[in-house]
Image (cartoon, rainbow, N blue to C red; front, top):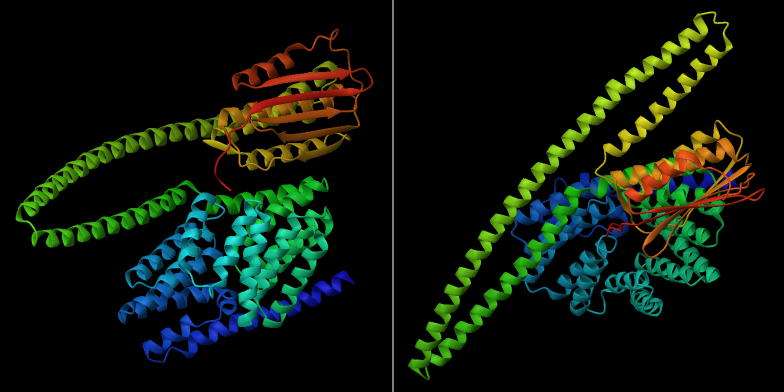
Length: 600
């Protein structure tokens, strides 16, 4: 039955996509013979849901609108086209471009004194920054709220989302309802569903699951009638959120999978990333480590493609340039006001004019000296930054060269040793059982060394190791361990912060966890191992617990293995503790400081 419903949905959704895609594609062809002014009008009036239903063609049309509006010197239309491009790049999750075009639109609206539209653009700018920099997002959205008219519902709705992210749920409900009321008065069948799903999110956080589902169902009904491509996909993501919050992970996986598949088909990168993240979490909750590993790999790839250092730096530069331009404009306005005052004073007192002139001259000279000194400081800082970047690049090249040498030379030599031992064992008739066992031990040692060498190369190739990357490595190790032991593995992680390790810290923690698991497999005679990762305010805590035979820690010599593990943890200012009781199993606890970033 479920399969039949899914097939019907896919067939229906393909028709929906075709209709939305056909609208924009047909418009692109139909307007080609029209005068430029008419072409511009048609492009800027494309309905929102149709526009995002075919992002690729809409991007071409928005770029065409910018060119036509520029040829016609129509500043208002240029700004509207810039907002369309900002929308395109928001759904493509291209951070630099979505910020750039919204800043350009704001600049034009301020120049032509279109305050309501400037307020809307500020709101869009702030909302697009919510996951990267919530503080800046709130700043720009509040700026927008001061300028927009009450008819501009989307700014209120988006500000409600930010209040929800701050867990100010009463404020979030207030702004969502304010937006919804405006949209219902306008009978806006695009805006109303957004209000419903955003209210659903607040109720999910408040655990009012029945109310949340009613809101999502209402939004879904409207969006299906409108053939709203993005909205229908978005609804499946909200259903996934609902079932995930209810801990009904099978249904959350079902909905997130639909959302992921359709967002891939329509190139909605941000939705792909969100679905991959929550599919990972849902599969982990069901102890399906293999599926979790697949989706965390997809999520990390999508995240790395949008959150690289070069893009982050460019985004920061754009914000600084925008704020600098605003300040320069304010300075220019202040100078203009000062000149007006001087003219008024001139009619009253010539001496006052001379005094004001001297003060102004001194101010200009001081300002010039200040700017000159500021310019010198900036040049000096740029030189320092360049030198630091060159040093970093040299270190990175040296690191990559060493890792290549390890892989190509030592790795290939170890592989040759393994191959040679196998040839000796199977191509030669060796009767000495001790010799056979010795060859097997050497073979196993070489294989273990290669595995450790690969882990070392993995760490050396990275300047920093994200928790997601580390998480994936642990999952991969568990999957490998399951192939050589009948022991049942359980893996749990409650870490929600964005954490990064240095390469040295990451490999040391991984080695200690790996050694702890290996020792349990070899000596504990356990049937179950539970690996848990938790976080406190300042620390990460790894716990490896088994149900094995245990031992008396006061009488057993733990040997070099524990000493090596303790040495690794002391190098990164961490600690390791062991608790064990005979016939009650063993618990190994590893504690280290965590490093948190602002990434989302």
